[in-house]
Length: 191
View 1 (cartoon, rainbow, N blue to C red):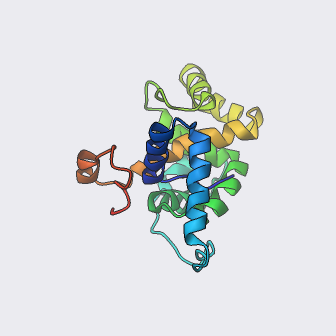
View 2 (cartoon, rainbow, N blue to C red):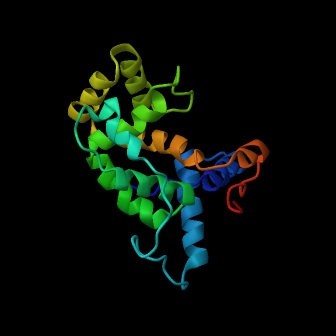
């Protein structure tokens, strides 16, 4: 699984899509190839764990109804959210696959975001929309059980990615959100 793109990177991809008419995945791949050509010969990014990002205090998630009384890895959740907020691809590359494998943690992260919302939004993945409908209809325990026992790994990964979008923007201050220019492909880079 590839690291989660930052908002600025997503804006670059969308701008390329508008310019060239390419699909999102093709535009993303070509931008990655372009970046690789530009960065050849430069020092590699530090390995995950060689640096750190200040993560949020998520101690309250241990009592989440989505945990269903099971222990959840709060430290990993905090590190993953911090990596997403920082846009750190090396940390995300290490933490996302491990988190997808910890389905109870995915249920807690996704449930905390989506339980209060009336809808997951138009751009949410089909797996996220389906899981949100189940959550709305049957409640947190049934939704968590379905995620841990029934969902395909690709669907769990899509749900996690959508939830991390919400968690990542949670680190932005009100002035940043109010003044953010979504048409600027580098809007988040200076933040």
